Image (spheres, rainbow, N blue to C red):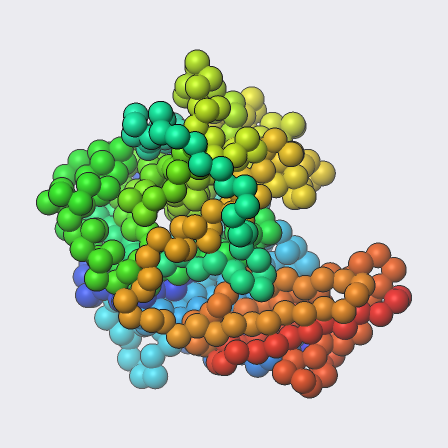
Length: 504
């Protein structure tokens, strides 16, 4: 039986941190409530309630925690994962009975052994229920306080689509077929190593440097969920973060041009040096550009992938607003927008010649109410919501397919993630443990996110019986356990987990 504990919501947040920043506080952000904010409240932030999320997770049925956002909003979330990086713990879950939802809590300075408040303490929560999203954000100053908001994502302002970051010469280069490329598999998943930077304007927008880093790791988790939920056995691993110190124009296209130029003294030379020193595949930088295009990402075209196409810029608000890290890094994977948006951006239709495969495009559902991660809500004919998945005809939302045979970015990503993961090799190897998943006939198993995993990572594994079958038992490292639909595994070593199905 799952353990439960109540968190009286005077606290909460999401993400995991590599290479923690120096403790700094910025001025309080001017959040000026937009139309999407339905209500809000400010509460004292009780760290003791959140320290329960610092405890070790035993193997077996997932634990559950209760969050009280408002007097009439109490959510019980089931634990799906834990990641620790550089002093930040990211706790991930879903609302009990609603696996399509997401609750992510990010803690910094909370899981330390002392009882005194750690300077730079940050708690952040994002609970995405689809129709409404609940945010809890630590406010600057002492004593600790948090602001809680209830938001309607359908009322968010929509940014203009990012322009494809493609050089003219790339559009006339010979085409390289991806046919025959080895796809990522659950037995051999791809890991793409990333370093993430951020600008002082992003820090100002967030309220503190720690808030930016926590949100970056929140976005890392969401992209990894998007890959797994789309059937792409791959993940990104943000191994470190840095303050770019860049005070110039934060417009994404301007920043991307500088970031991708190794001769540029403001952004590019530092990014190139970080890639050389650490051997990461990609560099992304978080900026703040309210009201403008929310990002820009290097886009391979015509099947031509090269490790110079390794850069992206993404707006801070869009990280949690519509999962935009997964969109911009999606461009690095060679994934294109939906066809309607592309036709608006390139009316002569020449974009078709740039596609890496004929099916490598995003998707808007036929009811015009949902888009995949690479599509744009601005192209819907009615208010619509971006789903945190890549287009895939095997996926659906409220009965609407999220792709078809001609619009299947997930299929393309299975081919391109190993390519991008092979751009560079880490100069300092990271310990990562493999989780070998097996199942008997009569069903399948899948992790919440793919590995291999950093030591201490907690990963949820779900069993899905085929029609006419049921789960009979789990075999974990040779020992038999009860047939809970979901079990959580702590990756303190390599492990093997097998689901045994029998006829119902």
